Length: 198
Image 1 (cartoon, rainbow, N blue to C red):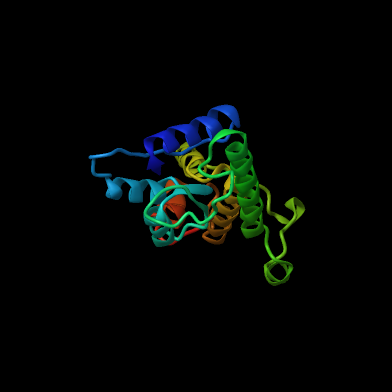
Image 2 (image 1 turned 90 degrees about the vertical axis):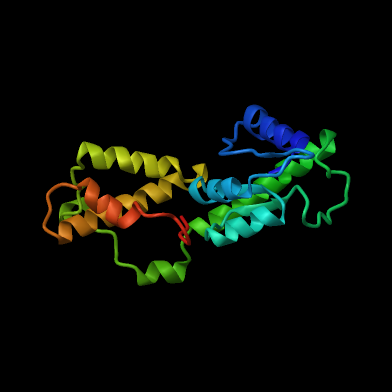
């Protein structure tokens, strides 16, 4: 979320040249009022892993409970890093962006990987021999799970998929069900993402 040259340039560089998927890019245009409600909804419904924008987008991210890395790229908001890499132009700008994105990806991994103290507190993963084999899913539930995973930032999709599958299958087993149904998946993960994080 930035002026048109920034939003278009960042999207082109990161998505087309670097191969990183971009959920959305919104341009601020002189004389036009930005649809902030739409931007807020995109931040909530298509959670980014890295968000370039202004202080406004940083607030929307916090409201949605997102843990995305925020990189200041627009006003309102201070961009204090006045070195040769900003404002994201030329070789120095590309270098700055790659460094920031790599640092953000490592931060995202920190939030995904469990702490050793947390691993000691959780129930041990059951082996397939002890009855933890994958449970069959109805076609509708499977399609919905694919949609939910597709909405997650690309780096966390594998862990989000495992977390969702494990939880839904465990609750279905405990309820004495032999197949995961759409209703159970929706009950656990189908509500609005407000305040939830991957």
